[in-house]
Image (cartoon, rainbow, N blue to C red; front, side):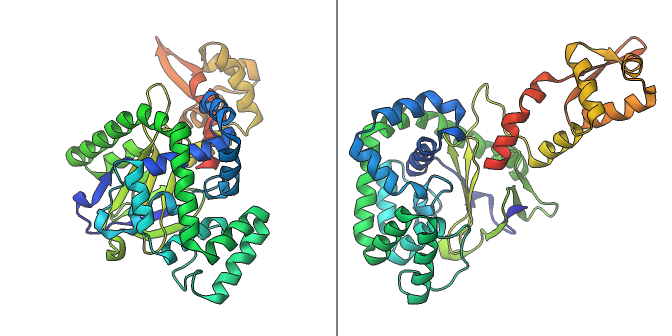
Length: 372
């Protein structure tokens, strides 16, 4: 499964790399709501949650479904406004001003697509104005729990009041913890965006996408961006409704998630983990599947126990496991193609060894794959 973005004929200048304070705030709120997704942030999430004022913590619980299991597109309002040319605000206040500019239909639909449905609804009547669609949205929200149902009722009844409430919530989060976090990460996010812009200019889109994530690639025709996701979707980056182009938004706290906005009538946005020193990039789902299949054979598991202790020859493995050298070679080939072993020549012998770093990453790679 994948999300595809049609970019046929799109000029390179319509591909934008830029940080977004509001998107980073919502990524931080997700990490606070789901700290198990972000073990590398355990210290920060524990300390920040413990320091929240009780009234702020309660208000965050009222709307946490907007960022807990998936991201509402309200954190990327620039994508619905053609005059932004795909660029978020430079400050949180500017991003919130862009959010205020969304009309009620767009604001309501953006919030309820996540809280009341598992995926984007097709373009059609707004939940804000169409009685039948409103009723369906409330039914979806009620099935998700009392808090979602109450929020949906408030939102459908009085969108301006919910806008005011949500903006105040975001502003209080900024005062409580986000201003400090943004001060620490904004320079790195800006540097990441500049670097990838330069890669795009000098080496082309395929290389820039590879730098963003192994989960992104150009298709063979060079006319579509393919995002390796556990979901399916499509967006047309040439749609003039939201301004043609694609925006790539780096995140410091979003890892391991890779979010893709592909809602009808919105500019496509890829919200990706920024490169970080000493943190390996996420592997592709295809590679993860290849590695798990390689380790599904009981004999290869037993061979890995030998390969983990020291480099051994094909003959030594054959003798240890009671099989022929050609059989060993076939199993080693499977492990090597999955990137789990290395082979080097020592005189006339080939020495095989388990790549401990690759194997140690398997647990986190699986987690990143299913959370992507």
